[in-house]
Image 1 (cartoon, helix red, strand yellow):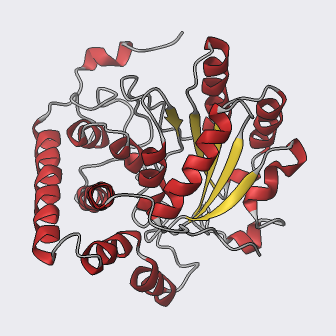
Image 2 (cartoon, rainbow, N blue to C red):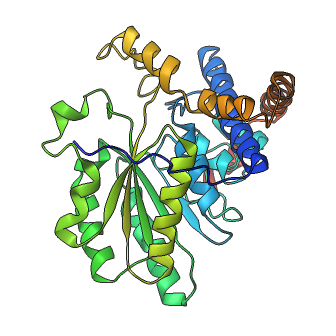
Length: 329
């Protein structure tokens, strides 16, 4: 089994490291609040939390530039926040309110922001992967140097449309980074039980697509790998695969009790591999920040999340007339 690559050395300044800490903490606190609202019955439908996987999207966003696009699956709240979408608009959409990014009609799994080049949020497993290649095709057609990030999970890596997309992306040398967020359990089946080739980054070998496994619990390792992948794509060398070895602390969705793994396993990951604690330790041990300063950041983040929840509760539900808008017929 290949070892996931860790950061060879610190590739960020103290200021950037503090920024990564704050962004990951924002996602963590936002998702915790979303879980609370779901439990209170204020969020309907499915709700898939990103808790534990924060380093993946924060590290990759650090390697992106303005104009790059991203598309992902239904576990999408973290991606929205990391690319700069307003927590108020995201939370309002989760609660089905008019102030949400999809006017309250998309919910947790279907919201978008053209301004931030975020193209969803998709409820069908792996359906976003060919869309990501389509975004990359548009970039190549227009002759710009933008890159498309197509995120999908270890379960989705077994879907046929992924390999059709790999073939097309390689054939046309599309600037697309395929990000496999391998959180070990898909929808509830361990990777070892559900995949004959558990090293998912090798899945592109038949199509001539290079790839690598990355420690997805280390934001600096993710950023470093993201920079390599981005340079490959911007140089016109075609697509690249990044397998992020990460871990979700919660169930597949809020309705999943996650009985397919032990509580001890989850606690061990939290205690030894938490991505936020890892950066926190670096900041304190490197004397880049004090405990009091980090507590102040947490307080500020909690305030922003609380305000987002208040905004969502105060925003009205969509008017009945909205049933007939934004429809393709």
